[in-house]
Image 1: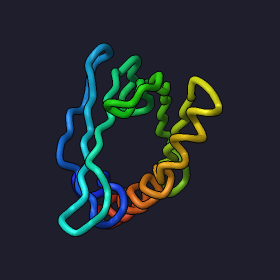
Image 2: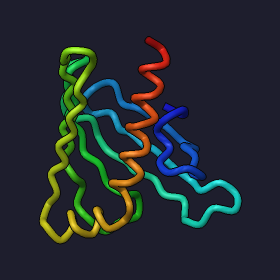
Image 3: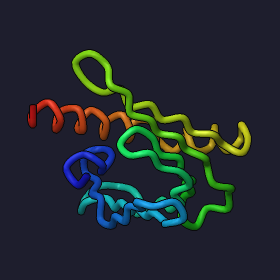
Length: 124
């Protein structure tokens, strides 16, 4: 995860706790590298359902944010030539969705998924 799950260039994954059983909690913490603007932040959540290696359902919230958690459903589906990763994020309301999308999260996730794809292809 350290090789791909760190967002935009200049950021680092500095803390990582992954849940493997329903009821366990997750925590991912990122921080900008020296000379890069931004404030460290963390996402926490709880694993609700799991069907390895095909599906996970979990909550997620930004630590310290006064907002309800999202409900995330992630599935991995075999397709010709690879695996399709689908992530459906359900927000409590449209305002929360727009606020979170305005943080740059989409760009950071896209960079991370491109890195993950590169890691998988280089291992093949």
